[in-house]
Image (cartoon, rainbow, N blue to C red; front, side, top):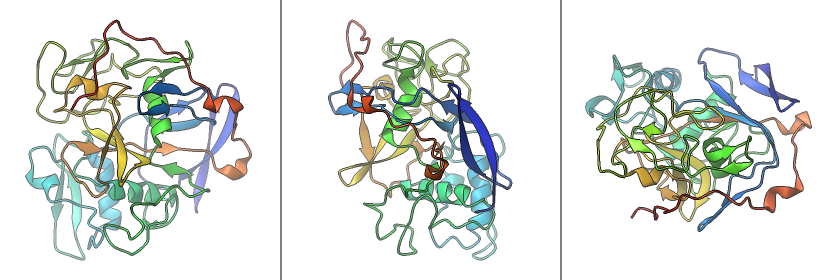
Length: 329
């Protein structure tokens, strides 16, 4: 893979990451403090990661995904494009031309909104393309091996991250830690804006603990569409990511039955879907206007710098609000 190496520093440890050598740029947030304990929930214990990594500060946008489509979907035999991206009011990418010469561009005013109407397999292919240097980089090999040459891979229900993966769809633990863990207190918050107080849903604001979701504890207001990345600047996670609560649901890599984990809530969802104690899943072939993704970057195993600590099986006692919202139905 033709790549350049970017050096990131996490808690005094220098880690080497292979990055694509071409075009598309991505904002990354370092997630350090390797070896943190997991957070016990009714569905399991989440958030323990034994290595420093980096995650997208924002969800993948329409502009970024349009670059991917332009590079790899001139004919689109893998179904990377969904026509709802053009014809739904929630979409943000237009397609022009005919098979073999399709061209794509972000719709005016929606370039920096999160891409939606994408499947889990689309997200894996985007990660492969990024890890393979973009441009003509392969979509079927790299961080993931997808078999069968079809939109739904023949190994789709079982595909997992390859040992030498670099740019990936985050696992549930990687996603969860970036959203809820505080390195300062070495504990977890209930909501991804660094608080145990339920997030308020509403229009973009710099006020803390707000998000683009459907209904807050008081019953309003509804934002009936995606919003531009970072539109809630006062509501970053403890590490500094944005929109891990609200805007679009985000696919995780983790298998859950025949589905994949989805976390974070969306613009039409109840505030409870943003909470750490809410785990849910979606069919990997699903392409909803409520679904998108962000990517992560993990150190290459051959750097010898992965820190695997024995505390991964431990659980942190987490702070709870006086009354806890039950999992939404």
